[in-house]
Image (cartoon, protein in one colour):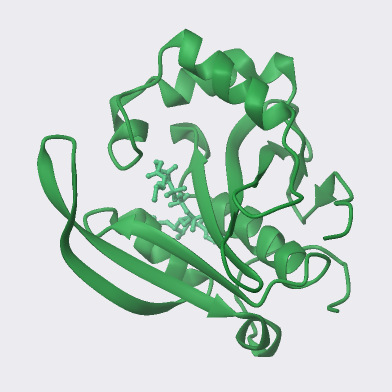
Length: 196
Ligand SMILES: CC(C)(COP(=O)(O)OP(=O)(O)OC[C@H]1O[C@@H](n2cnc3c(N)ncnc32)[C@H](O)[C@@H]1OP(=O)(O)O)[C@@H](O)C(=O)NCCC(=O)NCCS
């Protein structure tokens, strides 16, 4: 895969590599139970947040299993708003997208704008064929985001996961490169990079 040119700019956001200075803001939203509710594991401790920010800051995206991890920041105001990640899955051109925002950054379309830019990057520069999102059926904000991005609901796996002391039903949404290019996705911003 080619080198990834960062930062990526959208109408309102900058997607850039994580830095050590993001730690306190990352910890602030990842230590909240409401952020952790649909993520693996408990709310993050400061030590765990340090591990994540260190890993995200030094990500490489060169082989299956690697994660592309981008910090989301406002163009007009410095400070971490959240993150969007892309995991390289086994198979030809397959990846999984994920996202989290600080509570004060939700409800503004920022996740859709950031994820839209990452899908542009994935289907453009990275040459991906298919990107999926896996989520708990109860995570209605994530499901709405998938729909907003034009992802198709492909599967519903009843009580597939046991986490947070209960069974959870997994939804899988996906979008293909040709669908992404054909779609007039109503998310603002995006990477100006041309398709492959
Ligand atoms: C999942 C998550 C990232 C979604 O964030 P979000 O801000 O709701 O997502 P979007 O960017 O799609 O924003 C949509 C909302 O912004 C509103 N909005 C405001 N201005 C907008 C604009 N210019 N463009 C688009 N939407 C806009 C929409 O109306 C919508 O509001 P609603 O939720 O009241 O209907 C967020 O809930 C989160 O971080 N959750 C915790 C972590 C988590 O669960 N991660 C995912 C695990 S699978």
